[in-house]
Amino acid sequence: MFDLIFDNPIRFILAFVIGIATAWWIWGRLGEIVSDTVDSATDTVGDVASGTVDAAKGAGGAVVGGVAAAGAGAAALASDAKDAAVDTASSVKDAAVDTAGSAKAKVQDVAGKPKIAMAVGDPDDLTRIKGIGPKLNDLCQSLGVQRFDQIAAWKKADVAEVDQYLKIKGRIDRDEWVKQAKLLAARDDAAHAAKYSLK
Image 1: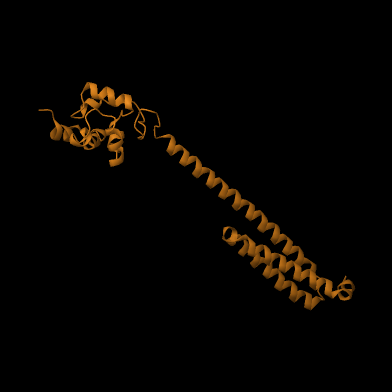
Image 2: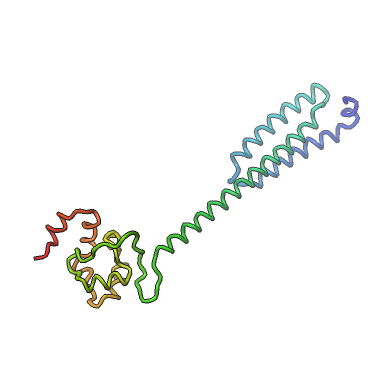
């Protein structure tokens, strides 16, 4: 074995250099996604390479071939880490797309109806809101406005969107539907009655 090493020292040194160069090239290409894993693998390869060089000097380079194997092992480890990172990134992207799709699905997009968040759950008795009578309640229900918590969450854009469909524009702001709905959604009937009781 020693005769083989001493007869071909250039080949063993080249194998060592190629192993280190391969590990270095792979480490440089993986980028930030797998840097922690590659750093760990590189440290391990560096330690093995140091020990191998020392051993090769002392024992005639009997283990120089092991460095090339360590470099190949590091390359395989880095490749596996890269594949895992790519799979994880793909899963996160798919989850984000699904979430975005779900959010869009929760806004009703039906011709003749306002584009607002859909009501979730059984309809509330909207006539409890001062300013909404039976006819306006029926109109609201047909437009998809059905719950106190739905109205309580409205922003100015939602109010403007629904206001277009009401026969008496500006009614939502004048009668403070959003403020009333917040109290009713919170089941604070006493506060609602104190402020909005029908006189």
